[in-house]
Length: 121
Image 1 (cartoon, rainbow, N blue to C red):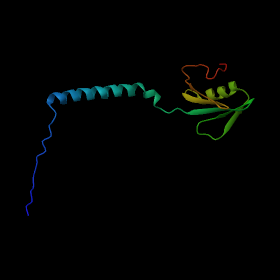
Image 2: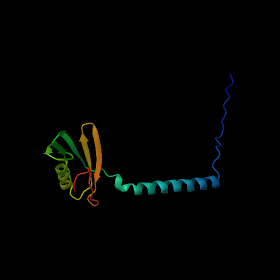
Image 3: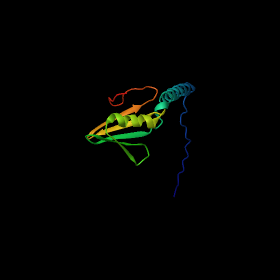
Image 4: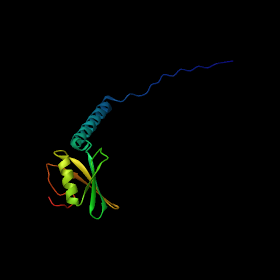
């Protein structure tokens, strides 16, 4: 009985110095571009509190604050939005409006006062 044992040396070709240099350059530019994109999105990555305004009847609007189970009822949309603006204070918040099947989201930024849903300021 004959057993043949062969040993081979793994001679995988290593990349040339030129290809290593090009890979380093392309890799560093990709990292730099990704870092620049992440820096530009830095303000958007934070989670904002969400206030929910729901129309439950013709003259009844309900506001739910973030993390709370208690609802606050108002007779007009203007009053509900004024409550959200007051509760938010100097912080940025997201405001969701539900009217039946309609869903609208708005972002309240105290540095840029504007109408959220067409209400009076």
